[in-house]
Image (cartoon, rainbow, N blue to C red; front, side, top):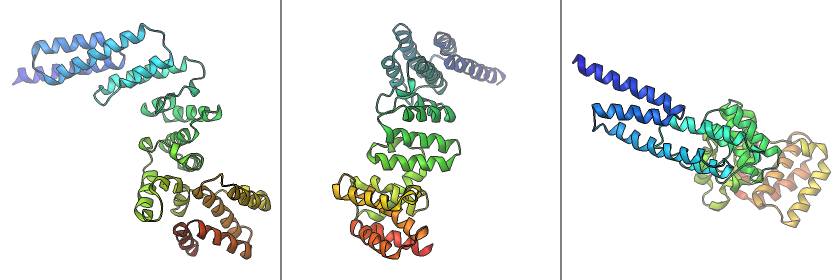
Length: 303
């Protein structure tokens, strides 16, 4: 019995040692540990699987170090990460990728769809403040996939505990390009809950492809998003004129024009009471979407 305990303890200690080697990407030494342990237990399936996986990564990293390190090579290495990659090895690879990207010109603008970016890598590493920095840098420097990056920045802010700014980022993302937001990677359950409830309640009223476009309105109706009325308050007449012109030119989606009417209506209701104009605006909101208008009036009556 004592001998068995010693054997089990040796295996655990040696595997922990190998884990440290994986994190440091010293894969030859890790493989030597596995070979040593297999001498004691040739049929150990866990170690045999580790040996195969780490051997494949050793070959991949060997080719990586032997080539010029550009964004394409870094992306290739990133694609090798799977759920089967040992966590400590994955952590070491993510650190390597971060350092590699930082060494390239304008790393904030290096983006290979759908998700390869220094910010998303830092999210995986749980370095949320750094991830937010790089997402913001990408947005400030003119990254083209703005909605996607706003959504990711919202995740970083949410994970930092800054829920107010996170909601601002999510709202901006769905206003700028709802179909561009990477919903499958969004980490905030609130976003998924809003979409699920909208699909459940509005499935007969709203086209499936338009559901995500209505999230800004739906989020406000459910108290998740805050309306900014500053633009309306700065020049109410100019805002109203621009709204009518935009709708007349039809260069805006129904969901977005409804959101802008919502902002105008709330300004007229809460900051600059004008019943005649408010009636006109609400009538137009009802024409554009009776479903949303009914939900809006339910909320207003509770205020």
